[in-house]
Image (cartoon, rainbow, N blue to C red; front, side, top):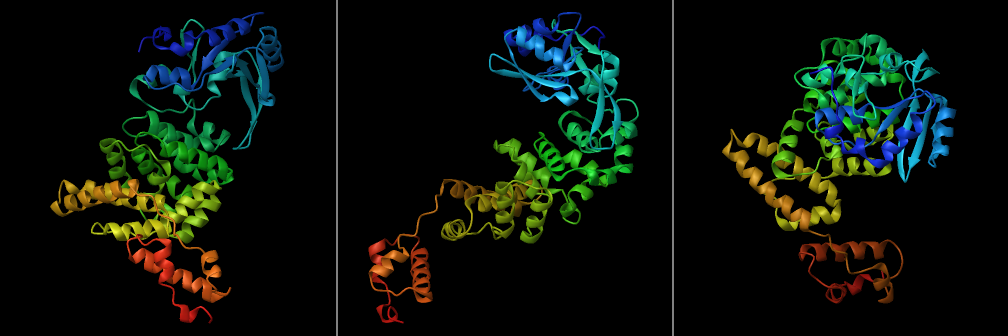
Length: 423
């Protein structure tokens, strides 16, 4: 790749009035601002740009002053680390002062602010994340990131072990960025360093680990990264549930997503590499400090029955009614993806895949009905409060389910055993 690289012709976000106005505000009084990191990297790789972050030679207080003078709203979101969020006509931009780490403990760093772009680049994690773009689109590369962009190589800046010891989360980021942007096999030094220093991950908060795992699982195809994580012993450390279960099923799931147009679902992908054990899923959810919704979905999936391809529509309706539509759909999707993966070499698997396709279509369209009889209905008919009332409700519910969920309230009440109402 040529040393003289300019991205202005392929970066609409760079030419946007709001960003150019921010450049004008900050490129004053002998200071300079440049876009850094993901926006530059993704533009060069031809992928979507979501956030635009800037680095500047101005001290944080100067950034605040210059932003105010330009009529923008500065918010000191991380000012102790040099970061000010500048809101320009409703759009936020993170602006961070050039810096170097003066002390690290593997989780957080103490920094010193500076004005040297080379020093700022060398303190970052990977070469492809340390590319800068000036206001006119000129890309500045101090660490060989352009060459690594061209070859889709994910490489630590400088010594891999030193970068990891500064923040052990970089081990997970190494595999996450490899999943998103790498090709072939991971860069050897980074892989060896990640394997050697993996125990440092135990110093990290559960929230940081889970956030990285989610981002990795959202990659277009995380299967290669997960394989190398397992080889390095990293996956077993952060996700021990996968150790004796295996990760092979995710290959077929990723193919099914691509072939069938399924949206990427990081929890479904997680389900494909961990056992459907409710106790272990509950423990995993607590350990990783998942959200309540994430934990509930993983546990419901684990409790749901395995879906057989010959399952009748009535039985499927019953499973959805008794349990969770999401959990049933997750079970079907995973079984469908597995059958599709085997179908090329097995006629029986092809038949199973077709059956699961029909079950999934039915499950997605089906809405679980509401049982039409309530405890209040029975009380009005003279049933006494107590265990007997609940027993009668469950008996009527069974009759209703066996009818294909078709009997209405009046018909069900007519089936009451009045001899038991006074028990």
